Image (cartoon, rainbow, N blue to C red):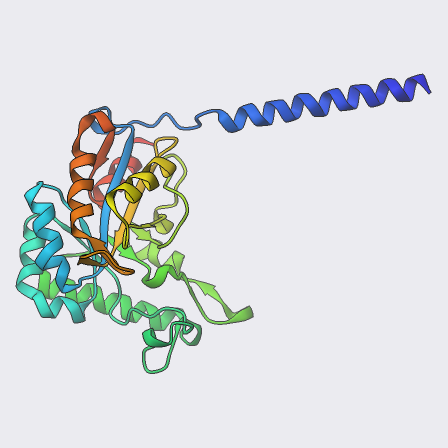
Length: 273
């Protein structure tokens, strides 16, 4: 009986020590990655679809502060402001591929193309759509995109047992692929460039965006903010006043951020991690 009691005590002690060690490990900063100019964190400002308001409102705000954004474009929208997008590319803003079809899950009935969702297409169909967008960008914008954003953040084709990820396709065709509506930033020593986490900035005030940054920035994270329209804040609109205040905040060295395009930060991380 004493032997059993002694064994139980030792077991409990071992479990207690293990639990303590695990708790301590959780609290340890696992990344000591550093960014240019001593920055502790990185941020990219990204916008999807090539909405007209990005050319009319968003890019002028970025240009005023000499900041470069990443814009994932759809040819249909680019055609409506072609000269503006050509100018944006020449001025150093990054233009990425966002497909021609913008196909998402068919659960978004209003986003179906010819009554198709991602559930009804295959990888060959999607490759053709993506490559057609790249060809358009080369011919009309003189840009060969290195970055991609998954429409609606969906990364699959097919249904049930036939589902396939198209992340490997994006890894083959581009340097980076960004998702949408994620709950984390990107750990520079761990993140998968083909599945970069993207966080919503649409519909938020500057204070709310700053709160989001504070929540996500631990362990030298790279935070990729994503928006659509730029104007008065709404469900799919980044508030122009919030964007202006955010850029001022991010550019202040005392706040510890490096603000750059997705491709610039990915290239730096790839080289240094």
